[in-house]
Amino acid sequence: MKKRVFYLLALIFVLNSCTRDELQNENPVIEAVQKDPLTGKQINAEINNTIKNTGSFNWKNASDHLLWSAIFRGNRMVSIGFGSSKNDFDRSLSLDNKAMETEILGLIQQYEGIEQTRFLVSSDQYLNQMDVIIDKEETITALRKMKNIRYVEPGDYHYFEIEKSLNPNEKSSSGSSGCGFGSTALNAADYTTTTPNAKVPWAFTKHNIPNAWSYSSGAGVTIGLIDTGVSPEQTLLGSSFNTGASSGRTISKFGSYVNGSTTDGPADQCGHGTKMASVMAAPKNNAGLPVGVAYNANLITYRAASNVVLETSSEQNGVKTAFTDLANNASVKIISMSMGHIFSVGKIEDGVKYAYSKGKLIFCAGGTSTSFTNFVGVIFPASMSETQAVTGVKEGTSNQKCDVCHSGSQIDFTFQMERANGNTVPVLSYYNNQADYVGGSSVATAATAGIAALVWAKNPSWTRDQVLNKMRQSATYYPTVNSSYGYGNINVLAAVQ
View 1: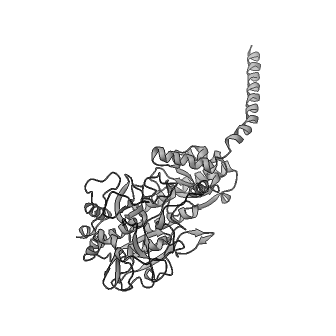
View 2 (view 1 turned 45 degrees about the horizontal axis):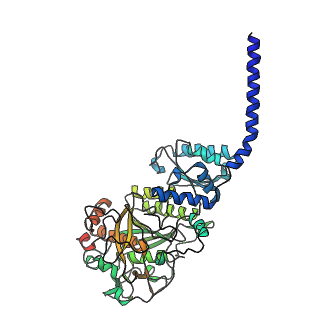
View 3 (view 1 turned 180 degrees about the vertical axis):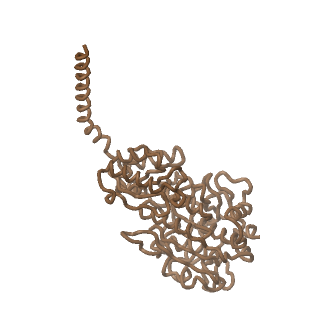
């Protein structure tokens, strides 16, 4: 009897083994179908639909297949954030960071079947974050199941490049808020003149900035600007930065954007960063050109990206590096960035949180629309709670956004930057001895960062929260925020008195 049972069990085992072998033989065919990556069009459609339906998109909510498809379409680059909790981003505060990293790299090596040196691209010095190259969807699935993974994201997916290819006849409506090297003769109605011979943009007067200069010029405060760099041809943001009424201050320029194998320096090759530096801190002298809000503040600039859209791995890494560098610079109190993306980027989010944890007051642009992204509300990283989101509004209003500006519940402040005739804010040009105009939420953000410098310079012992509260108390809607425009326009004279 026992022998019969044994033979029966053996027969069942053999039959089951045959069935498994047959299934395994069929699996490659099934997997081949499953592993066809989605096209860029399909990926973007899912992203856009999610934003339209929920208001935001985050890779953590994407399926393994959508995520892997975007990784595949993005040069197989993967950004991994790890830690024991969602806020375990700072290596210096994460005792097990090396062990966690080793475990993750071991899993990748196991699933990819190659040595670590062939897939590890970089490991961040300050953050629990690394970049790797991954081929297999199974690796992505396994990574997302690990307990110490905070996020797994495409590291080089070019959403906007694909979107433009799908909409070849659509043109950006971002106007002067993007790249540009133009110079323009300023309309005399768009400025007044102040001693010794500087032009005061009309928007400054609307916010009572010239009267606030009697109390504060930004002296002693250092602002960090993360953008596309500063023009080497504009001496007022170079050798003549410390002239006239702007004295005893410094400007320092760095490059964190890697073009090829090395950074290509601090020089602006877009024009956007130059304009942001101008509205923030251009000198008040006798050159007969536009002055900045905090004309006596120190300025540290980073060329962190090639343009205002942060979608390539080089740009995202450049911005992350700029945030961590400025975070670790004790002299920096304020950080301003008028660039972003329509959805969150984990490594940049880590950089922002790291800077915030060091006490920095961070201002980010709420968004300037293009024809195929006008359905987006407040963009990233302005959408983060650690940042102050700023948008531009029309002259004489605090709740009518500029023609290309974004608005939404995450906006904190507004700045008047568009006139009835369409003219925006006068600034220094990319070229020496020349001026231009700039608009969008970009200039609104840089100007508001300059306002913060005036408040902090007037009250040098204050904390970030005290400065922020004073700005709020001096704005249109205090104490009740507007549902789409935050606290509104700041009366800068009231903020410094």
